[in-house]
Image 1 (cartoon, helix red, strand yellow):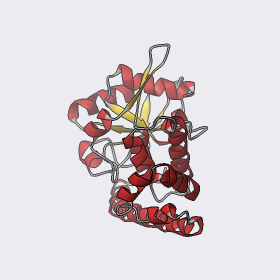
Image 2: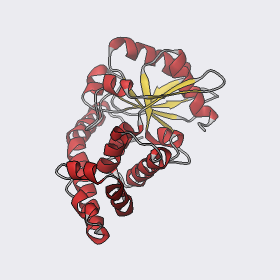
Image 3: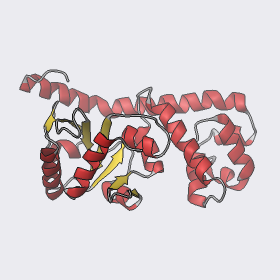
Length: 252
């Protein structure tokens, strides 16, 4: 369950009609893949009207921008995150990280069409990234994200394995992070595995039941994705350093 301070943030976003999707640790909490997070990471529709609604929500939450860059469309559409800290008594200390573009993740309208909507008994409505989109967003260079990716996939598998549809099965084949699960999938759905091995070659080892070969193949795949994430963020981090230098802003 979402803690009350986070609930205050999300209900304020909903009241102000911000088009947002919850991602990060709090979305993982909802999906049963994490126990706790005090950050509220959201991806938003990047247009002037929605930025105006977001500013209204931030004002209601008494949120201050705590780092460069400022909340501007040009920074958001280039892939930067904008960071805030809430001071409203019901959400004091909660950090909100806002983005509009995610590496290797679909555009906002596509994400919105695949979202998970949670309606609580009290009337609050929370909008979340779907599990497949959240998994993609969490595939970063950070050590803490990869255990989360694995738990998200396994929780999704356990919740849907009884009567999965083809889209869910393909998602498991594309993203599963443990040799045992991959081998189990190939034995349950060999025809689908055969059709996907060209796009994810390590499925060949899974089809042969070769656990020892799968472990290093999965590590190599993770290392490649981490390197791609580092390369993606390198120019954005350079720009942030230039902004900090020009504005005299210090580290958070």
